[in-house]
Image (tube, rainbow, N blue to C red; front, side, top):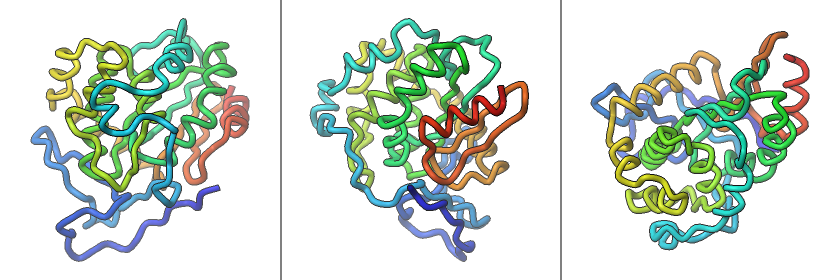
Length: 257
């Protein structure tokens, strides 16, 4: 189980090159990507190491649109309502909100090990609906990945996009999220590629969305990705620190239902 991330003391000067696992944010519509160091807000992904592997395709294959897991992903979400960032019955009284980075190994572990069971046990059954919020904390590559996820969201394919991404996630120490790479994931899913590319280039679409998530993360003092807010008629549960299991999420859902 991962240790809770710790916030280091403020740095006097931002480094020329961002350290891995630093919290990055969008500095307004101008799309300036900057490390939030002055305020000491450097957050860490919740599992050390860069050994995550979903057994997927390599970066060159992804860029060519040849990804592993396409049929698996299609089956996982078949028949479940999806509207933007929301997966499941919109009338479900409990909402599970996840804040995640597509390049984060801890997020990949959650997605591959626990998320499929959550979809079947909680989302497909109507016990809860899911909200996926992209929180890029691992540098400019993560911001580009978040842009792509938001572009896929415009076609109500965010969950397929993120799931397929995690199955084929690359080594986080490499800057693999190129234009060709993110387009390759879209191609494999059969997205409208011109519409996807147009949305990805629309700063007015993705910049405010990422800024909003950064604000929530700071207000809630999230320690890293993935983090969760689970809300229902009986209150709210915040999970941030160790990667939650299916059982942990299920228990939280019951407590707020």
